[in-house]
Image (cartoon, rainbow, N blue to C red; front, side):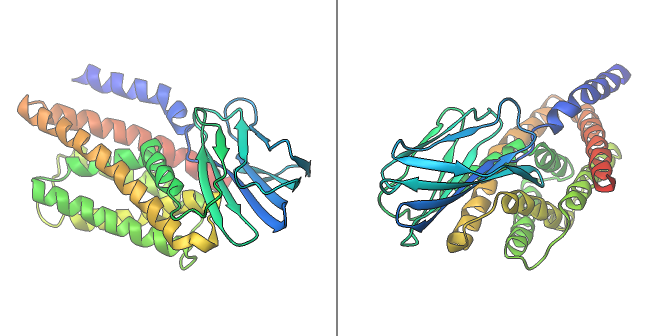
Length: 318
């Protein structure tokens, strides 16, 4: 057992920096038509991207003039003036050098206020701008799923919660409370009704993971009202989800719909994780290794939570 603990800790301290490197920072290409076939473009690309910087390829009928890029938070921002011989509707826009960790959200607002939103990635780097108006901002659903699955801190928090809950009913109540809570703060934050510094929120989220690790290590299981702790911590995680969404910007014309689809994407990501974790816990019970599994999980959560807490606290100070 001692060897298992030591091995788990050593592995985590080796791989923690690598896991911390994958943050949810998609690129965002914002294209606004200011006059007929004349466009102003904001190209926001994450500074910490792995590999060469992504570049935009416009249709051959367009000529562009770019200003010098400048850094804004975690993004490198480049403003571009674009003049085209015809509308971008029905044309193809391409972004080269996207990395496996960076998607590109595209928001196009036409002169008649039609709004189109699409998503490009390493496999699908070309985007056909539709001629007809887009009904739903479905790209935000994909972003929500990606944020949940790539957000290792949120995933570990859900795993820790499930280890503290007994019974299917309590599990459903707990996950429901967590979902309602983060939906509330996600909405309030995106609508600018509440606001907290991003670095502070991320540090406190790391602290919630450390708390769960301590509770699991003490073999605590919440048989009554486990949803209370899930609801309280869900409010904090909702602010973390909101920071990811507001960091890339959101079209005001489709604010509520974009928010809804992003939140639905997060829920879909959760639904993918819960059966996997539930099956893991069930197998631990079945093969009578639940205590050993709980100890291992508590060390994983504790080590990574402390790593993130220290790393993010340093980010606040400096």
